[in-house]
Length: 411
Image 1 (spheres, rainbow, N blue to C red):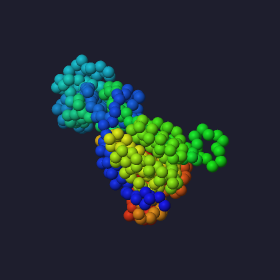
Image 2: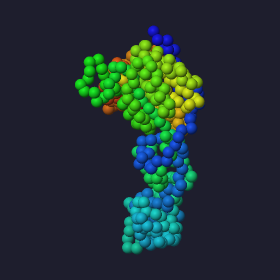
Image 3: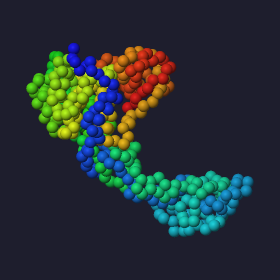
Image 4: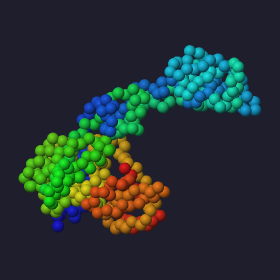
């Protein structure tokens, strides 16, 4: 039996060994990108607000801008009457100043005029002639957002490693940030195996299967903010394998291999990775199911990371999700290395596990908020299509009964 698969180490230890052995984080190249081009990518440095937001103190309600001290005693039974002094229009600065005993009508989003510090909601007022009847007190700052309250000048709005996505794009647009510093990390993906053929192969030759791993890993990386290039299929033939791996590694920062499920191929791959400059091959197997036959190597001097993922599609994807993504986040020095959502939910039915390895089982979330495991063999592909994430079963836990809580990692 292959030697390295007996030398498995815990997943978190593997992350630590690689991060320390390769002195993560690295100084990653950066490129300034327009925000539309940066969409879906990770930024290489902190982004700060260059202007305050909102630029003016604005109303959060339709109503009347007032001096709060004027209406401190206002109630439905004992209303306060203020002189109606004007209307505030949207999109223009007020050209009036409110004095004691006055009020001005204001729409939601309107700029508060000088002299006012609060807004009485429209439903708590009644306009009669030139008088505003106020039927409720407000405190200073009520129903308004102050100038610079959300983003003062110099506030960090995005941190190194954050993604430009639907959550953060609105912040950039609001502050007029047209370009952001994005990581320029070159990641190459090679699928290996003499039985693997390109996805466009039709008809499928006997004994062959179309490449799955190259495309699934690439799409997963893209989902979490890392651009990569699919470089095709690599033969298992010894000399050609070594030559191609070395050439690809020399032209990228991170090389991801997938395949090589046979014992002989894994041993051959490990020998190739052992030849890399120090520290070379650091991890020879991970104590997880599925995904045990994972190799991680790298060169500190040349700033290279090489990860060899298992060949079975479910195993390959699992390791890419639970190990490769956090490795890349550590590599770029992300301020927040979290991704996806991790929480505990009750099981919909029993799931059997064994003590020893850390297990990851595809699952879906039911309509009543329970975890339903999708039991599948490591060679299965369809299990991921309907999955919402993984159930994580720690090394020291066995069967989890229906109704008991389990840890779930959602995409």
